[in-house]
Length: 134
Image (cartoon, rainbow, N blue to C red):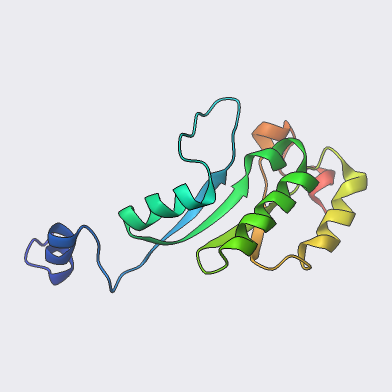
């Protein structure tokens, strides 16, 4: 690390670098059986983001791993409340192929989603399985 760097100096002095925004591209929202999240409401998350110098957060919802339709809508509400700070990943659960097509069609009607979240281990489904084909 170059301690004479203006970026390093600014970070040490101010705790962040104004010219270098931080974007958290892997975040999860909401309660989950294996994780205790003390600050889980959007306003609390924003407070933590501000303290840490995070400009944007891209998240998926823990609820969506169990009920993708409800969980994706929950994230849509969080994004709608703070579209200048939050973006989302749309969760696809390949174990319910009858829902995948419908949920894919809904994806574009909710602003602020920038991609898809696949979780083969939680869904116990191979990433190259037929349920992901659509």
